[in-house]
Length: 146
Image (cartoon, rainbow, N blue to C red):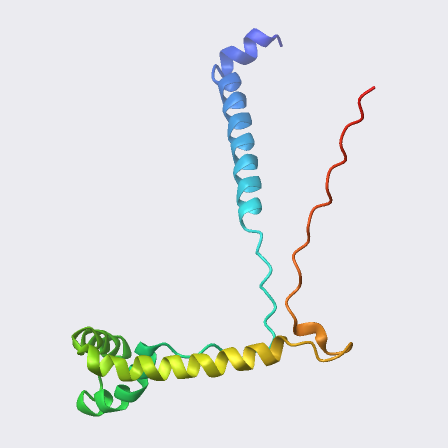
């Protein structure tokens, strides 16, 4: 059989081959792109000994009011309670907010003291919590002219 007789039996064979080739290359490109994107980042290792940051003034307010709101609105979803707390905080006068802000500032001072003690070098074996000095690039040597 000649090439003409094959083409006469299936006139779209060449087109089919070309389309199959295009589709397979497109699939290969897509899978390569998806595999490239799906690489997971390594999580930053968190030291369990590091002191936790203090709660913000809003969270201190929230902690003082959440049980009261749960009693007033039994069966309400936590998301709805959070919305109520947000509006209550927004409508709270500055004098009342100042109480929670003062608590936050006091907790912040305590936190900074604990953090300083945590970062302080404690001898050769335990000085690992001190912040690492930033690496500096070595100075480039001047090009010699002849």
